[in-house]
Image (cartoon, rainbow, N blue to C red; front, side, top):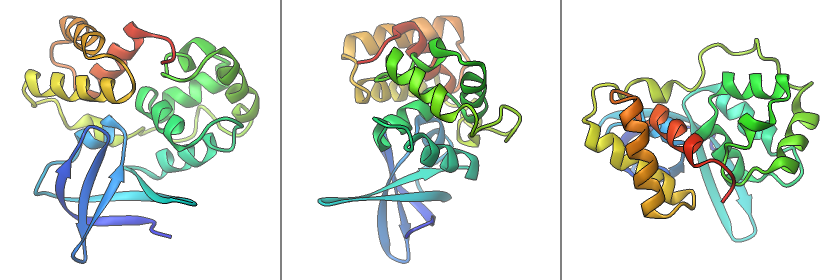
Length: 203
């Protein structure tokens, strides 16, 4: 079990980063908020969870224990796998997710692509008593360090993330442009959440 990877960042993609550790490059899937806190060539530490399938071994990375724990907890719900759990964390930071579950806020959960009314209800029923809105006050720190990035770079990152989540390029560009008009100085993670909210509904 690989629980953490530390080393220089070799590559940053729309849904993953490659981090070198002991001469090996590890491909680690992460949310846009976490990826926004990484910089190519700089050293990074990502807490990881390995998901093993018959034909694959996939690493998922997080900037906080809280996010990693919620990732595991989400997958205890029937019908929620690693990909959907990552989509939830991409749209809702830990505190927002806890509040949505505690308050039975299906609309907030349904902003996640792939989460319809039935899945949202199941998440609330299964997890409401397992999480506390008061637990964990920091959220996913990865999205808080991107304020000085050029707007074009931030927009490109968000557009790539949206297309990776299943939206068309035209939808992604329009939603990102609209979100930028409302919040010109937003970080990529904030911009992504705003764009997803305007698009709404599962893909």
